[in-house]
Image (cartoon, rainbow over all chains, first blue to last red; front, top):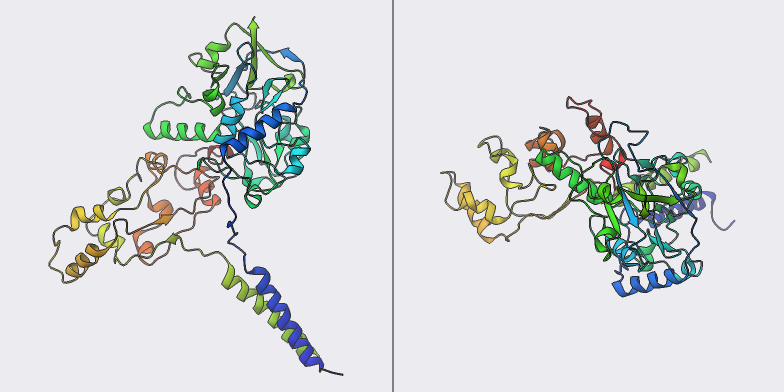
Amino acid sequence: MLISKRTFIKSFAALLGGFLFFGCRNQGKKSRSRVRSVSVPEIKGEIKKAMQNQKPLDSLVPIKTPGPLKAFPSEINRFGMAIDLDLCDGCGECILACNLENNIPLVNEYQASKNNYMHWMEMRDQIPVMCFHCGDAPCEKVCPTGAATHSPDGVSAMVFARCAGTRFCGVNCPIKIRKFNYVDALEEGLQYIANPEVPIRERGVIEKCSLCLHRIQNARLKAKTLGVEFRGESLTTACAEACSKGAIQFGNWLDSNSKLYKKAKGRGIYTLASMAPFDPSVVYLKGVR
Amino acid sequence: MKKGILLLLFLFFSALILADFFFSPSVSPNMKKTSIPFLHSLHGDSIGLSCEACHSGAQTGREAFLPSKADCMDCHRLPLTESPGIAVLDSILESSPDFPWKRKSRLPSHVVFHHGVHAKASVSCQECHSGEGAWDRGEAPLMLMNDCLSCHRGDRGFAPSATDCASCHR
């Protein structure tokens, strides 16, 4: 025998310890050395590419004006949006505004070739489609970790830190608008970082329109600190702000003084046929009733 | 033979413990060292300054800020006491940078915490930040979500508050 058993065990244990040290060396401090912030023209280019290859759209069906949520009947707020299809010409300004507001990353070439973009808003047959914030959301029912939840004021929210990436919600969404983060955008230099209010999502979580939840939260906290009732009068979303035709209107469905309520009054209210049973908070407006 | 296995086990676990000791993220906050010998207890307990006096925003804003040198100088422009230490302090203040304290919040970016709302609900600073003595000893309390939740559920003597995820998480 060349070496004794004792020497072998000793050196083996030392080697094992060494490997442990080596393996643990970067624990707790992720290297962000290659962080590169994406420029706006790159995002515009990606939106253009996505809009050239649009997915088909369901037919539109009329629905009633969204009312109080079944799960929270006593709430005084239900936030939502209306998209006026008589004014919208599908220019895509809203997609850009959304991407910039929510730090939405670009995708790599492989995902782009499969037409998988991270855009929370997208055009389908020249009509903007985003999460409709269903009052009776099918995605939330299948989330095993509770990451997809409904807030009492009508937002179908995603708690990114809790998402384990099962993608059940994405499968159960009738319009498949939930986007799975296949790419580590920070690592690949595809992350756009501009708005400190919105967290950068890690790889392996589902993302979707949050109805600009950060704006709602900030406004609510401010109103509570000042001791005034919060109905979201001065609130708007990034896409609504950016629309030069004024086609998108954010507001409170349960407040008759809300701009949204006034805009939708007397108009034909529509949603996609596959969404109709789920009580959406974001609706389309077309013609008069 | 048995000794060999014991040695192996010992080495294995000590390697784990050492690795944890060296590479685990630090618990203390990300605070820049300053030469100013500041004591919270000297300013709070003994002369009765409120936290808001130096940490502006603590009562009304979303964030509570750290004082600048100018905030210190508001009071320390003149020698305040007969104590011999005050001359030393004044000379240190003289040479310190305009913003002696810099601190990166440990609040993760997916959580929103508003100081003003909690102050409005008459939650004192000490409920979360522990007493002045702890800060002087260099201990910074670590708040976990359970600490938030126990209070929001009404277990700590305050009125129950929102516990839906989207109130605080984004």
